[in-house]
Image (cartoon, rainbow, N blue to C red; front, side, top):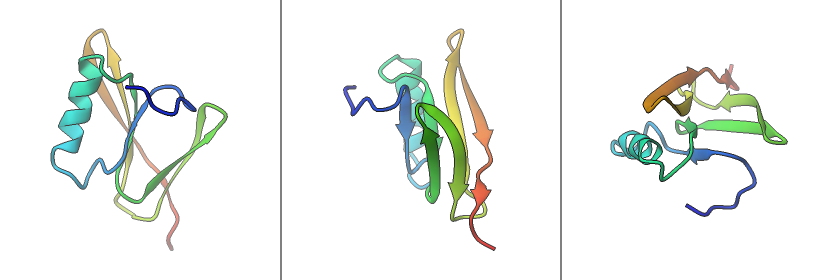
Length: 87
């Protein structure tokens, strides 16, 4: 997929709010249609400095981000804990 190309990899927003979003993203990464990347639940922001992920923040206490990558044809999804911005 040709996108803006500002950052390497792929990104999938709304990861927790649309039932078919997570399996569709997994399928696209496994099939090579998208490169490995990051996914974020609603309310989560990924802050990059240059091309490096520097910080993850959330307006929701239970929201998460994920690194989604292939390792020897196995999909690996790693949960990343954001810094909650509320009280």
